[in-house]
Amino acid sequence: MRTNGESKFSFLLIGLGLGAIGGLLAALLARKETRELLRERSGKIVDYLNQQGKNLREATEGIVEKGKELVSPRCCSVDATTEAEEQTYNEERRETLGG
Image 1 (tube, helix red, strand yellow):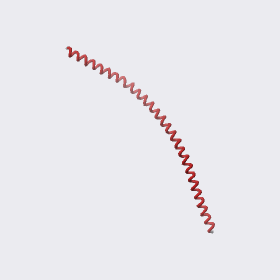
Image 2 (cartoon, helix red, strand yellow):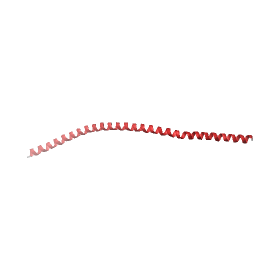
Image 3 (cartoon, one colour):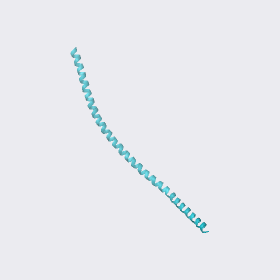
Image 4 (cartoon, rainbow, N blue to C red):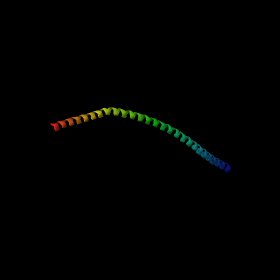
């Protein structure tokens, strides 16, 4: 009986050893595949983010241009107002100095 029990125990140890080696090899292969999968997905994510950034940049430029168009008539009117005020001031000054 001893030989039978010892052989079962040795088969158990051999099986555990082969299982551990197989598990390690499977884990190494899976790790390599996982890295490749993550690299591929990260590349797609970077491309997507670049595209979204480009879209956002274009939209922002459009908004800035519209803002400039809205503000520029006001700027011109402010310039015209200050010029009119300067003219009025100069005319009043001439009148007071001349009169």
